Amino acid sequence: MSDTRDETGSGTPAAADGYEVVVVGGGAAGLSAALVLARVCRRVAVVDAGQPRNAPAATMGGFLSRDGMSPAALLETGRAELAGYGVDLLDARVDHIEPVPSADAPAFDVHLAGGPALRARRVVVATGLRDGLPELPGLAERWGRDVLHCPYCHGYEVRDRPLGVLGTHPGAVHQALLLRQWSADVVLLAHTLEPSADDRARLAARGVRVVEGEVKRAVVTDDRLRGVELADGTALPREALFLFPRMVPRDALLFGLDCERDAQGWVTTDRTGRTSVPGVWAVGNVADPRAQVVTAAGAGAAAAFALNHDLVDEDVERALVAA
Image 1: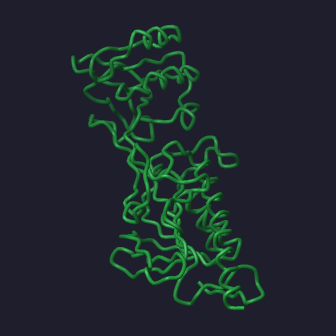
Image 2: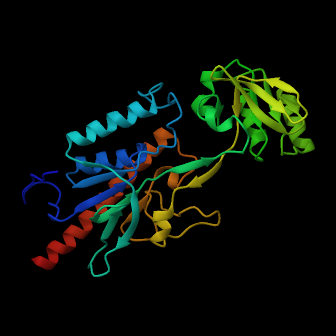
């Protein structure tokens, strides 16, 4: 990417051998952060390994102006916008991030797997998470299609259909109660969960039936979920199945930098995504498992605003020293 700014332009021209910001992860959070930073004339690179969490989903829901758009189309549009601003888009995987020990301010070498290291003044980690699914036949192949997690993302598309909730997590009870807004035919498949008497009373009051017994497999024919088969051989027709996945953040880069984490093991950040390590931000699902696409994009923008102010403060201090 060429840097055409001169000393009188907004922002600070980057050193020829590095970037002002490297964003690791090219999902909604990472691309949004890069867009804001490009618009304040920072020299930015985005490194993306091409493994978005929502790749299996056909569409996104609840994203104003992008409702019904495919996740792939959103990322393609975002990358095209960034290219127009001169952001470097690198299809690669980051192996590790190493602080530059001799620097008088935060600086990092972002090492690409099998490739060079990118020097950066600041780093945004937006590597997302992966969904760990129960090891039941049929679930993984239908994930994001008719085996689902978020009612707000997918409930409208499966409204008025027979729905099931797989009981692998205490939150499954609330999920079943919530899904009753979209369908009159919702069942909680107890599976490995034992709902309490209070849970059962609330489910019954809401018109949600509890089906006892473990689930053996998801029944899939003609590229569609048809239902589930229980361990005793009983078949239960369902057109969509909801469950709580085990959310595993892709956070190895952050903890390689010794970023602090909370009691649950997630990286701790302030409201802008700033981690405990100066110069490092974490945004999107790598820091917030509840973030949807639209909120992840907003978090990326918020991080970029804060990060740019941080760079401005550093630029001013350097100018004072040089004066």
